[in-house]
Amino acid sequence: MNSSRGSGGTAILIRKSSGFKIKPVEIQNDRICGAILSIDGFQDICVICTLLPSTNYSQDVYLDYLDVLSCYYDRMSEDYITIIGGDFNVDISCENVSTKSNALKCFFDSRNIKVPHLLNEVTGPNYTFRNKDKSQKSLIDYICIPEILEHDISNLEIKDDCPYDFSDHYPIYMSLNIDLLCGSSGSSKLGRHVLKWTKADEFEIKMYQTEIDKILDIIKPKIDNCTINDLEHYNTVLTNALHMSANAYIPCGKFRHYLKPYWKSNDLNAVHYEQREARREWKNNNKPRNKSNRLYKEYKEKKNFQET
Image (cartoon, rainbow, N blue to C red; front, side):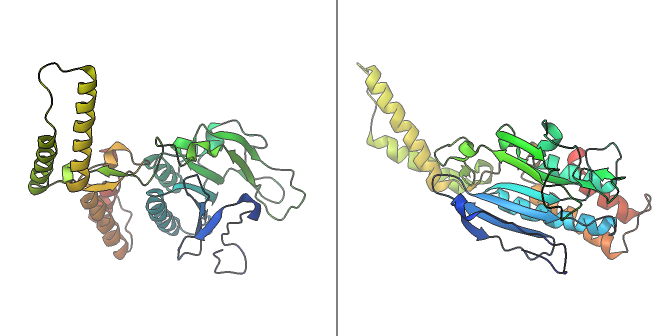
């Protein structure tokens, strides 16, 4: 539970009867908290809860917290199925466009994150917040899931009939079929290592080739009177040789399922560094918003590089 005030804050509550082993995520933030859920036979799940700043705060404060949330999501998504839930304080279902709603949509889209109650039929009202006299209604609370779980929702409700009315927000109930997360399912396994051929240097490539030659020299294929079984055997030997040599000498990295193609670039680290530096310089100079200002233009160009 994270809260710096007597009210508000974030918390994640998990039933003991669920059987999950629970490990808190170390997050130093008053508006974001997280937990890792583990159970034998299934892939681990990371749940992140957030309360992004309301309209009482400036746009810049909101964007700063969204940047922090993005960093935590990126970090946890490399190893876990990651689900985000909470009060985002922006209605991205309406036609009114704002900088905050655009930034939140960009966060979702760039990471293939889906908001089920914007895509599926929902039982209950089409809003989650209402003021005391119900003159204002908006959809600002979301449960966000990775794209690979989009079709595994068995139930989705916005509950407006709770017996205890402690909040001006309605709770969202979502039921997921987690059979997809079975540990024996290789198709969606996260955190698995993939070969990074583009990062292999000349020496590593040479060692890879030498290792293959050494393995293949041990078993010579028959040239005459070759049977189907001989071909199958040699195919297995060749495949194993390739895998063993690659695993021994080619650099590996973690598969990141949520990245879109333009994020899978060798220049990503450099581009991301330039993006952060441009934003830092813009903030250090009192955040000018004149469209002709050099710092403002550079910040926007670096921020929206994937659209160019």
